[in-house]
Figure 1 (cartoon, one colour):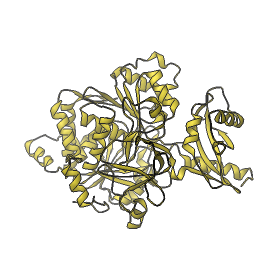
Figure 2 (cartoon, helix red, strand yellow; figure 1 turned 90 degrees about the vertical axis):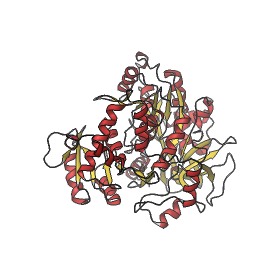
Figure 3 (cartoon, rainbow, N blue to C red; figure 1 turned 135 degrees about the vertical axis):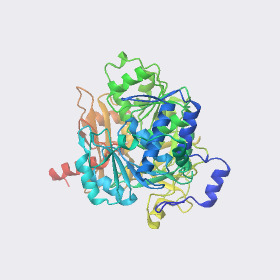
Figure 4 (spheres, rainbow, N blue to C red; figure 1 turned 120 degrees about the vertical axis):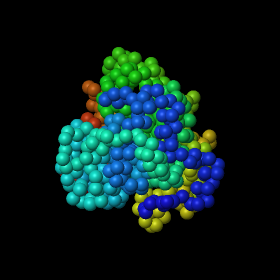
Length: 552
């Protein structure tokens, strides 16, 4: 039964995906139960609070699920889940999946404006949230949101002190018994695999985030085929260092560990020293992450002091990876680099173990699922030949059907006439079918009518000896429309000049069109709430500076 606001898959598509077993017909709860039944005594989860065998984790999840049912959370109720990288996120996530609730996944840094936006779209009945986290006091945020969101009947606090106003998760679970009746009631709440399991926010770099509903079947398709691509097995220990509120951490980390029976380590720190200590302590073999976090590790002066020999593979996505980063992982850590591309909408591609370094440095490989159709098209939707840039579009068992509560008009713009999702990414394919991401359609700088890829310039700048990081944006110009501005983060003790940068790019074979006409030195690139470079903020910053200088 589809919920209001979700566009079901076409009947003929769903029947085909099921008949050919591209959809496995399993839910999150099925996956978790199978994992814990097969390896009950294996350590399944580790975080800053402790270690759990799969049997212990199963008991805690089941008791929490029954506690949620006793609270009154119904099947298909939407529940906001906003927790950091704590084991309580995983327990709550799996418990909600078991009772057939639909999870709206938030990151800890979402505040009133985003939470109210999500609540308005999804009408949640409950909200699981910390009382405090780091410098954030959620109590005034909760008060503000409840005024605007009357659908929220239950606020469930995690790691909170005594609170008379709201539920504490410990209080919900205390006294719950895993009796035959309770377990039978829990089993009866199993959702249909075709139903929505979670709703995921997009990056939100151009306004408030949209919401991507994903079914159990479609999401498990992503999980299965990505796991094959970087060869996750029951012998692996996967460590999640990106926020669990991000799709990357849930898909490449939590779900992969359950699907392939790996051990999962979750840390609540992005400090490179902490990352290295946990790798060494837990003998971590695999890490899914974003370029910025692994780059911080490579830049550590004392990296050699840590024993990282257990780490065999790092799957990186969320933003473009530079050739310097790819080579640095293999040279300094000795791990294999898997260059990936993924989205909450389900379009996924990745290189694989054994691919040549040249391919990994520039390409995101092939679609992870051989049954997803991913192609490059022109503005009219016509497929382009290899080597020609166009928009990346996708369709198949791992691809979503549209944003939550989107209108027909919005869907018509989002999908081609033959049902392919327009990703908004500019790309090309080579003759082997590998995908090369060359920018975002909206991240293209249009200088005097010429389309210039910001990503390609950033890739060239990544090898500059005096530049640690960079982001290239278009700055407004009265004559040409836009010119190129490069925001650069210098390496310690070095301040690159515009002349240095231009000379370097010329030596690297950059065209005249790719040469920046201004550089701005900054100490750190601004990030969005999902860990991507906030180019909207950079465009606004350079526009403000030009206005102050009287140049526009």
